[in-house]
Length: 159
Image (tube, rainbow, N blue to C red; front, side, top):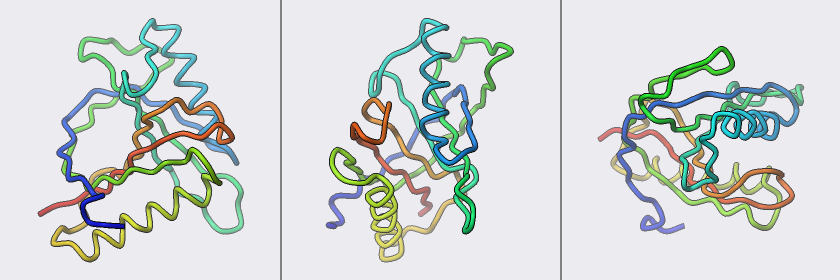
């Protein structure tokens, strides 16, 4: 990995609708919630037309197949919450970003390996780890881990 592979991005503040699942495959479950909700609210657009971010919440732990995954879908500032949806205000922040192509291979190997490369970059850079949320931006549709997809991994940084 070359340093030029890492992009420094100041992610702007945004309003997001959140979707959560806790299971052995929470990404797929919460993704289905995203699609169902967005289609029922006439705001479904496949990434990258609509920004969709995700992250483990909580991370996997030894001895348990279950963990959580939360998706954030960027929404218009004037969109009102409903009884189905939690709306959050994300304050944005500075990030080191690395592309993660999961088109071929096992996502459960590729994604952690790419996160590891991003952490190694941070350790050798002049940046420090930030306290804002680590994120995975879904750049392509994510219906199944078998079909492949592309992410940008965002590690929070400070100067």
